[in-house]
Structure formats: structure tokens, C-alpha cells
Image (cartoon, rainbow, N blue to C red):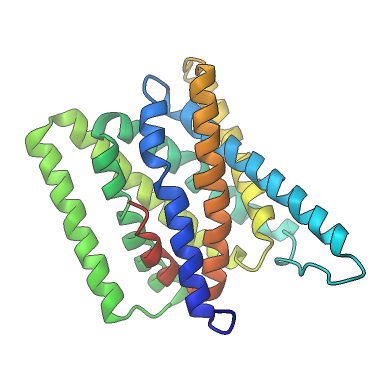
Length: 265
């Protein structure tokens, strides 16, 4: 496994997908009656706390290993020149996308919303090809076509079966996947940076943006139970998962990582 970066990247992408996909039904349940901005703020607050916890553990291990077998650095630290990209990542992936997801899940439901999350892989593959000229083989192209067809069937099903609210919710989730695909593409040049630095910056800014939006929109204060559940979902699905995703991108690129991450639903 250590000799094969592709195998290692695939395993990391699968683990990221599991960590992210498992949280979607919980978010739909805990976010009922809450505003989308408040939900997104709690998710990324949890991710920021997870990044801080992982950073603390890493520092402890490195301190223990000093003078014996030092823990290798995970990547270069963020630089001042990275700030515009980090802000854009936080805006698309930490504010716009999770707010659309929360709003869409409340109307389309957890099952439809989870399945529509596959469109993130399609948009990521297309953007990786267009921006970074990453190779897209026939298997990835076929998988992307199948996911587009599945998404179209789900949207048509909501249009003819459950009314305008469900259709609007499904389209909102689809728009959220586009936001995360833009996030993935913008994040690709940051893959060589310390993943925990990237997570902390993205999550902190995303939580701040959406908390301000929730305040402006006068959204209700979430109950304690919802706060705990959503923060835990954020720590797992948006903190730990993002770290694994960035490490996978470093090993196999954005297109392959995105296609494997489609296991999340």
C-alpha cells in the first residue's frame, strides 16, 4: 500500500466518502425547523473544532517523537498569497454550498438529497478536466454519465411526484454540489499545504460567514440537542472527511478523488 500512491489515494477517498455520507441523514433530521445559515454555521464550527483537535494531537505526537523518530510534516504551511484562494474556498464550500444543502434537505428529504450529492463528483471531474487538464478515462466518463442520468431521474421524480417544494429542494442540493465542486477545484492547488491549516481556515471562515448571515436573516437560535448533533456531523463529515479528501487529492488528483468520493451517498 505504501508503494502505491493510487491505492493509498483511493483508500483515503473512500474513507472521506464514508465520513461525509454518513452525516447527511443526521443533518436532515437535526436541521428540521432550523435556518439553513445556522445549520451551515454549526457544521463548519464543528469542522473547525475537529481541525484544532487534530492539530493538538499532531503537535503532541511530534513533541513525543522529537529526537527519536520525528513525525513528518504533512505539508507546507499556508502563506499570505493563499488568502484569496482560501476565502473563495470558504465562500463556496463553507458558506454557499452547506446553506443550499440544509435548505434543500429540508424540502427534498434525506434520501433524494443524499443521492443527488453524486453530482458533486460529476462537476468535480468536469472542472478538473477543464482547469487542470487532468486525464478522464472511459470508465470515469461512463460513471459521470450514469450519475448525471441518475440525478435527472431524481429531479424528474420530484417534479412529477412530490410538488414544487421537493423540486426546489432537489435543485438546491444540486446547486450545493456545484458549489462543493468549485471548492474542490479551488482547493487542488492547496493539496500540498498542511491539510489541517486548510481545514481550520476554511471552516473558521465558513462558520463566520454563515453565522453573520444567520444573524442578518434573524434565524432562530438552535436548541442544544441540534447544536451538538450538527457540530458532531461537522467534525466528522466536514473536518475529518476534508482532511482525508485533501490527502487523497495529493495522491491521485481532483478528478479521481471526486469520482471515488461519489461513494458518499
